[in-house]
Length: 73
Image (cartoon, rainbow, N blue to C red; front, top):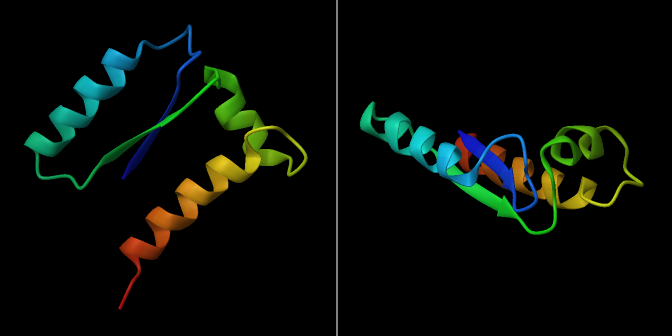
C-alpha cells in the first residue's frame, strides 16, 4: 500500500498519515508513505486525472513504482 501526502495539505495533517501507516504496519501491512513537496490534499487526486497537471507525473510514478514492486515476479 502507498499513502501519498502533500506538504501543503491543510485537510489532513502529515502526522495522521504517519500514524495511519504505523497502525497498518502493526497489522502486517506493507505500507509506504510518500511525501510530495508543495502539493495539497486535492492536487494528489485531481492531478492524477489529467496528464498536463503539475503533479501528474509524480503521482503516477509513485503508483507505478508501487505496482511494479507488488506484481514483480
